[in-house]
Length: 295
Length: 278
Image (tube, rainbow over the protein chains, first blue to last red):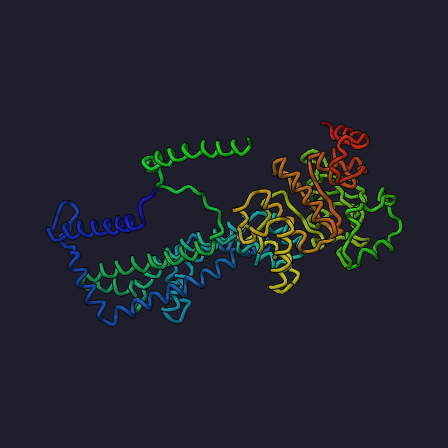
């Protein structure tokens, strides 16, 4: 038996609480053992700053700005990445035309494209979306390409011998079959997107969580910096969980092992003797009745 | 698309042993308007992938409605022959025809049944059987009722909403059979469909196959490495070996489990085994 869900949640909350407690202790006591915590804001300072921010209008503007940017960029990247990945995997012409171009651009960190974005786009807003999109595009592209190439050929052959055409193969075999792999790319992509949207905001944004965090740093408001960091952490966690849940929902057909990690035989030992006893007791009796029936 | 009655009239030069062979009793009683089988023929054909020919100089005439079993050692080109007949592999040389016309690519009237794992794993058994009907453009309710009827026919009515990996290998092959037949193909091409099943399940599947094929009138090409299976199911047995079609033999009293010790049958079995070099 694994731990009950309630117990597991309690453990998770405890872990977070202990981490915060250690932080509070180190900062309030101004510990200075090579690592210097004297300049650090305490948990209470950060909490107070957070409460202040929550009541103000700017915080919510920052939040919606950042979310709009990342969602626009990420959704664009998902659509473009899946489309390009399928195209490159399925068409030799597309592979020859797009392949080298994509391989040259891929190693460039998206945040290094800030100068390009400033030159290309009339507004900062579009530049940030462009950078976010580029960041998520490549993980989605690469995982889609691999997933499509790894599809079992008999699925496609089966649909072809039912009279299905290219479009049917695409819709009924390629996309659903590649979905588990595609979601792997989307999960990586949403993480990279956050890194890039925050960095881009720090460099060239007006409003946005990244912009605010950098502003607080320049005006020596360290509690504000931590509020920004906590916000980024929570938003990142929420969005990647959303992607993860959607992926699990859409790929529920995947065969899963019945093995559950953490379940060890020793946990079942205290329970099993009683069950075993009842089993051995009932088994002969049914055998007897069967014998009687035969006689 | 020409009907098979046309075909019989337009191709009077019926070749092969089926000219004198009366139609078998269990395949005669066809419902009026039921789909009839298609004639498939290969002339001087070379088969294989472009860089590696597997079979050469194949001459084969498969009569409408017959069950032709193909035996041979593994790697001898049985699957290549089947994929060529399905239209998935183009010929390297020679000619392939369906009802006298050229056969150019895969089509719904030549269904393929694979050895295993050809069901789409994200679709329930019912949705898998509905797929060929959806490709045909049938309405949702029509698809549903036909798929359910086929699943019922192969004994899977209770498992219609299961995913393929939740049912046994034998049940998956039954679902695949239902999926292939749901599209009302005029030829069913089967690539060792029972090869991965245990002997008991396999005999049951053979009986089921004979049962569900009765009345469809579809031409069947059935590839197997099991000589007994080939002799039980086939009107004729084709032997492959050394890159050629070595012989096509007529089977006395096919699909009859009681003729195991029939002298003609025993002699044929011995011939087939010796020509396969086992």
